[in-house]
Image (cartoon, rainbow, N blue to C red):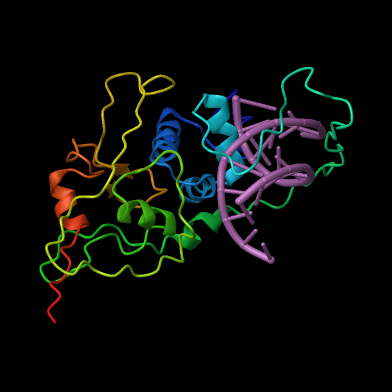
Length: 228
DNA sequence: CCCTGATTCGC
DNA sequence: GCGAATCAGG
């Protein structure tokens, strides 16, 4: 008879962290996406993202908060280490929403270069994604983006606008991760973020740009000439 | 208030 | 090992 499987105990309670999902997490994490953003694209919570990221040993990014951890024996006098009380909820097995993942797949994929579409960039995969697209230099640190959804339309250059961005600091020290064979790869999203078929271009990007020549061409639309 | 990530701790 | 809950800063 058909056995249900000896190891069928694993329900869909947790994210299936396969090599692929992990790779995607690392990719997105490396790209400087927010934990919430990564979680959203992976259909998981930011907690899961950050938790897994730490377990994977991914390089911590500039935390908005201070070091909650002090060196051992660090003036533990007046400052009482307020360990947060374990008043955490005893158990909150909220109902799982299964068909909840497909409720937001309204995003559009990077349409091919349209002949008359000045905005070939992905319709709007994500606010954060849009940010990285608008910013060639994916700064792993000091990412000082005000708000992903509050980017004011920058004024176009008057003329002779050099398409070169100032200071693309590739801070790839190659230490924590980046085995070696992992130079900069084109991070143009292909497919729907969150679907198994989703992946990045991976081609060699132009110097100072996150995209390869092909995608950079469609990613960076030439600013319309401003005539007075 | 919103956002962010880090840490903790129950499962 | 996983992730909700919580904490903490901007």
